[in-house]
Each structure stands twice: as C-alpha cells, then as structure tokens.
Image (cartoon, rainbow, N blue to C red; front, side, top):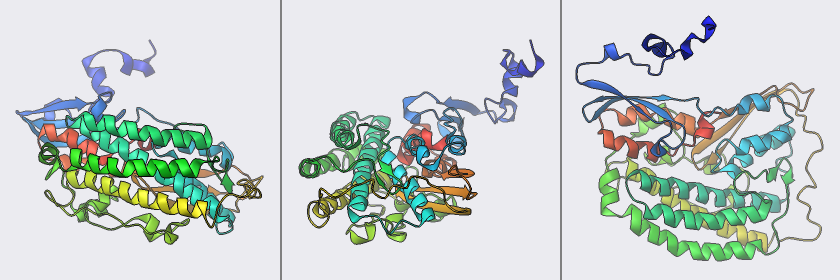
Length: 406
C-alpha cells in the first residue's frame, strides 16, 4: 500500500488524520459531545456537514464543513470564453439561475461599455424573468423551512405554485432550472407570443394564494412559537459578518442593491424594501427572516405587473425587434480588474473579473456568493440555543450549497 494513501486505511489514529472533526474528543469537557449533522440529512439543505459541540441539549459551538459539492466554477471560468461561462453561472444557485445570469451579464456589458445602449424591452424582460425566479426561489425557501420545523402542507402548496413559474420559464427558454437565457448584449429569444397574457393570469391567481400562505404559515401559532426569538441576528453582527439579502434586512437594515445601485430598469419601477420589525419576537429572529421573504414575494409581484404593463405598452413586441441584435461576436474587454454586484434572492452576488485584454477568456473570475457569507454567521446564531432549534436556524439562512462550494 503506498504510504501517501495511508489516510484511507481504517484505523482510529488514521481516521483522526483525515480530520473528520476539528474538535478532538480529548479536548471535550465531561458533559460535552460531538454530533455530526449532515451532509446527507435533508434538513441540512444539501451537502452541508455541521460539527456540533453540545452540552446536553444545548449547542456550544457549530463548525460548518464544506467541500462535498465542489463545482469548480472558478477554474472552469478561467478556461472558457466569457459567453460560454453563463451555463456554469446557472449551476451556482440553481434555484435562482436567472438572477445569477443577470448579474454576470450586467458585469460584462459594463466592461464592454454597452450597458446603456440596450433596448428597454430587453431590460424589462430581464427584470421580469429575474423576479419570477425570485418568487420561485423564495417559495422553495419558505416551503422547505416548513418541513424543517414539522409542517408539510406549506411545502405542497408552494411547490404547486412554483410549478407554474417553472412552466413559464420553460416556455421562455426551453429549460426548467438551468436557463442560459440572458446573453451578453441581449437575450436568447424574445418572449413567446402570448407569454405576457399568461403571466398576467398567473399573477391574478397568485395574489390570493399568498394571503392563504401568510395565514397558514407566517401567522400560525405553532410556527410563531418555533421561530420567534430563535436565532436572533443583531444588526451590528449581520453587518460585521457581511450578511446580505433577507438575512440582513430581517435584522432591520433597509439595504437592497436594486435600490442602492439602481441597475437595469429597477429605478423606473415602484417597489418597497421590507425589513424585519420583530412583530412576533425580536428583530432579526427566524420568524422575521421568513416574513421578510414573504413580503418580498409581494414586492416581486408588483414589479412583474409593472414590467408587463411596459412590455404590452410602450415597449411591446414588434417585427423589427431582434433580441440578439447587439450580442457581440467576440467578447474581449480591455485589460482591467472589475467587480459587479446585484441582488439575488439570497443576497449580494458579486463577480470579480481580471481581463488581460488580449483574449476572450478571463484570467480570473471570482464569485462572491451570498450563501457562503451568510452561512459564516451560523456559529453566532446557534451558540447556547437548544439542539432542536439548530435546524430552524439553518433553514432560516436559506443556503444553496452549489453557491457555497463553487
């Protein structure tokens, strides 16, 4: 047996060499023990393993272990032309691919200097599909969170309504989850004929369903008891850890890049930024984080309605409209370092590019994922809580491990 593979030989000493846990058993106090949570347990939301140090039912420390789903996104990106990276961007947060594509493409267009020259119809379509995808992502977050704390019906209701969105997006681009629809300088296709009308019908259907969801889940007495005052994230801690999205806004800060940076056509649209107010407990608890996501669904509906008005009025389809008219044949930005960011359902998604100027392949493409940053605060949220509440805290963060293990 080669000596460099000794870690695969089963022996208690060699097992320790592979570092399954960062905490050594001999360092534990008499009442403490190590519990490995995940990486295949459904409530760990993908391949996440948590090393939990407990004292009876109380959690003393939580150490996340990652790397089970490494997608090699950044290394792939260093070997592909800019436009061929878009399908890999889809695979990061596979529940919000349109939002990720929008941010990535927006960065390249700014590097090329064409961001303000695109037809408004393209911009409104991009925002429309991104907000539909935001709804679909929040539906998964809220629905699976119900399962985490013992409620199954909300999951069924939300998967039913999410299916309508999946079918709309599939009609647009032919794929259900990994779209490759938003291109640098344009779109893969214009919206299908009749899409605006069907989307408007879906919004009419969805509005009363959101009220039903709110009554069933958010205002449910059992849900409140399981989530209020649990996993409280103070605002200063959220800022210090770099949290963003609903995680940050639930702690009380009205910070949304769609408003702060005002990219695409968001400045022309009327919508609010919901924040946590501690209505049922403490500002920044698990209940607040879920309530903010529900309120954001209402705001996405408002945005979609306004986009549909524009797409059927001032910027309606014409025979002359070509969504690929401004797609560059070669994407070769000049030599520069560039960072772009945007608001996805999980928070701030950013891309850092380094271009050498003499090739259409990036020298470096680094992703700043909101899930990775938000997950970093889990030890602070979980310390001195009950073990049963740890699952509620994990679910409230809403992580997608494809974005963490890039």
